[in-house]
Image (cartoon, rainbow, N blue to C red; front, side):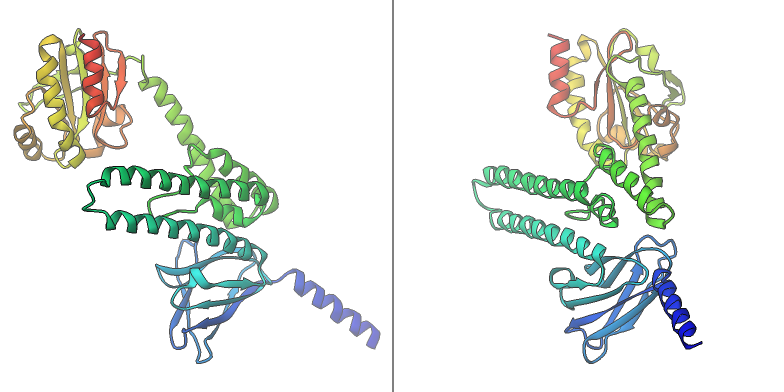
Length: 384
C-alpha cells in the first residue's frame, strides 16, 4: 500500500509540473521599498494592471494564473518599465534599481525573458547613442557650421538605425521559433521610429508568424501576430492594385464635384491641359505651406497649358473659401465637404494630405506627389 501511495504521489507531482496553470514573478528592486509596482499583460484587451507594494526589504511577488505564455510589462511608470515573456510553471526572479528598471534589470528563471533582455540591452545602447547625437545638435545651435554638422549627425543616426535592424534580423533568424522573436518585430528606437516596416519587411513578420504557428498554435500572442500579418498582406495587395490603378501611365479617374459657387465641375473638362490634381484642406498645415509653391508654378506655366484642380477635404464651406482667398488660389476648386469621407479622396485611396497627381493632356498620370522644386523641375521638362 505504501509503495502504491508513493507511486501515486510521484505521478501526481509529474502531472502538476507539466500542467502548470500559473507563473510567479518575484524579485528585489533596490530603492523600491514602499513604492507601488505594476504588472500588466501587454496584449490584453482589458488592460487591467495588477499591483503590489514593494516591502521594506525591496522585495515583491506576483502570481499570474494562466495556461499559456504571456507578454507582460512590469513597471513603475510609462517611462520606467521592463518587458517579459513568461510561461506557465516558471518562477521568474527580477533584480533591478527602481530608478531605472530597463537599464539595470537582470532576469532568471525564464529563457524567453532572458532573450528579451538581450534585445532590450542592445536597443538601449543604440538609444543612448541617439541621445548623444541630440546633445551634440543642441550644443551647436549657434554654430555657423550647423548645416554640415546636421549632415554628419544624420549619417550617424542612419547607421545606428541600420545597426539595430541588422542585429534584429540576425536575432530573428536565430530565434524565429521563440516568442522573443515576436518582441523583436516591435522594437522601436523612439515612440515614432519603428525598426521594421510591416509592409517593406513583411518577410520577417511572415517568418516569425509561421514558426510560432507551429510552436504555439493556439495562444493569444500567435493569434494576434497571425491576424496582423494577414491584414498587412491584404494591405500590400491593395496597395499593389492601387499602384496599378493610380500609377504612372494609368488614366486618372474622373472627379465631378461642386465648386465654391455651387456649380459642378469635372476633372475631365480640363483634358488637353497638363493638370495638377491636388488633395488638400484649410486645416492641413503642410498643404498650406505647399500652396505658395503651386501658386508660383501656376503663374509661370499656366499660359503654356498648365492648370490646377484642387479637391478640398474640408468640413465647412467657410473654412474652405477663406483658405482659397487667403492663399490666393486662383484655379479650379471642388469639394463635397465630407472630410476624409470625400468621394474623391476615397476614389483615389487618399490616406494623407497633401497628395497630388500630375496628369498629361490625355488624362494619363505622369507624376505623383511632386512638391517643392520637384514640381517646377517636372513642368520645366514638359514646357521646354
